[in-house]
Length: 239
Image 1 (cartoon, helix red, strand yellow):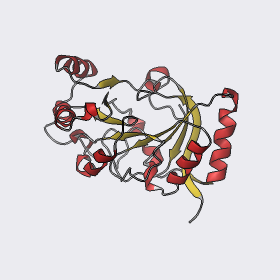
Image 2 (image 1 turned 30 degrees about the vertical axis):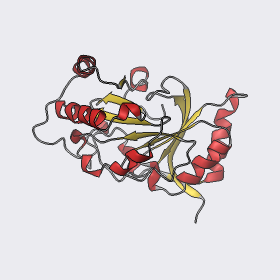
Image 3 (image 1 turned 180 degrees about the vertical axis):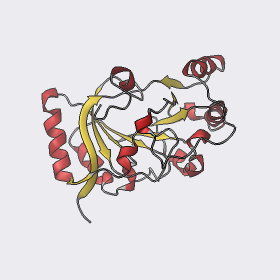
Image 4 (image 1 turned 45 degrees about the vertical axis):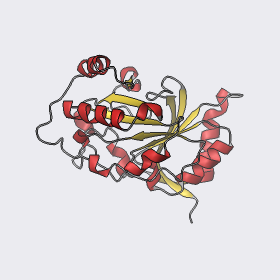
């Protein structure tokens, strides 16, 4: 097996989402995704990338992490869909061995069981307006641990009611943190032609409506913003 990955970008920024939001984080964005969610804001990672050896990736991460010594920043594998590339698994293991706290952003459409147990998995459950909810791999729920997080990206009232039912009927609050994230409208340059359309009949809801409904329904979830989009332009890369 080749010891390389197709990498879209590696950069240092702040973690903008999850319970780790606000902390310095090294991002490793892998190329390719098997989904085309209606709200995807990183369509450039579908095809853009460069073949890079695991040794080169680790060296770049160590270089970017050096100013933080003796502590280490977070490292997150994101995409695209990292688990589409098999060598993402040994890379995460090596990074854990190197002492990093490793996060994995994954769509929930692929098996998360093979991921090193030290990795903090942030797994989507795709809501109906994504156009990809039929791809959710429900077997993954049995593999979740307290250190993992489940993310629902919500853009319509139909999404909210669907996500609420999943959280309550599946008892997610007793398994791990459930994140509710509002769909940020895409800017024209971000609207890739391959993205799924929002299904007919869906009614958009605003960020405020989402927050107020979470509170009114006393849902055991954490609302999150994409912090980086409030600091930098929403379509800026490398942040």
